Length: 436
Image 1: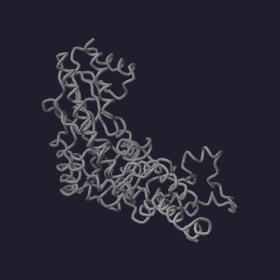
Image 2 (image 1 turned 90 degrees about the vertical axis):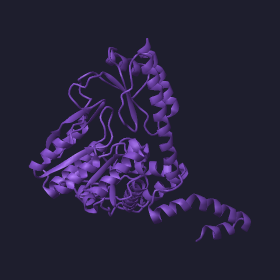
Image 3 (image 1 turned 180 degrees about the horizontal axis):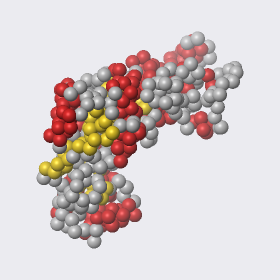
Image 4 (image 1 turned 180 degrees about the vertical axis):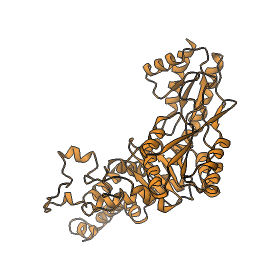
């Protein structure tokens, strides 16, 4: 029975209509989401999110009071608190052999996964990659997402090695090893302050090797520049080699997204991997893989072994709905302003102690030399002062993405979600440490 008819049985028509309007305001965005599965223009309220997830999780068979559950995996949980940790999606996602396949015992969870995948793809398209066609939200963080993508390319295309422009970050190296592939390091070169991939060396390796993929990077700490994606995608197209792009926290940057979009148009791109927490402010645990080649999504989903926890997928979907397009536009603008403010403050600090800010293009971070100062000690003291996130690299140490980088330096970030107060407080404490 329609709720308005039920209300008319007990209260006057004008009151019933007013109540119906309120309920409709609550439920209309949920209906629209389930009908269109798009990144919403306006953010959802916490009540709408809770209503949505309670509704979907209630469809699963573990919520059926008359169900006789005799299988070995029946979404049994120790307490209601434990169930709430996965928002009631206790069956997990996927089936053996496909992490995004529908589950007979979990129709609500299966629908939630499909909505999450399509909302994530729509969000990435609206935020800059209009030429991607498909994608999946994985219950794995970025490094494991890279491993799964590379493993899929090994199984489907016979990839045996990965050409990887040097990046001093352990996670992608572990991903290559986990996929059972040979790591072929491509050296970097120093151009003034910037460290960048040696494309001539990448071309040389590409011309003489077969059965390889290229792993390129958009976002890292200064002094490392983003890889030249358009050149690499053309090279991969010419050599019929897959290209995987690690776009860990690049969604927040319009220029980075534009560079990926141009790379897709110019050549070959097989998978773009982004972190859910670094871009959409969800708890750590998920990654979003998008691709202009729909079959690649299937390959990746079929590479995952067994079922998976639903919690990171739920959290990612909830975060995207809680922000919406309007919210993300504001966050992007705040991030750009905070990045400019961070550089201004670091230039002032550097000038005051006869140091300088490195001239390196980076959408999120900037770096200041610490030549002649106790770099590691400064980093440790900042941590003791409750400043989290600064990265200190000593001259020639692992982290600069090149041998013998000529400076000690400190990196600070102004990533999406950080506040102006965060930047102000951190730089004030940095000044006290370097000037004392």
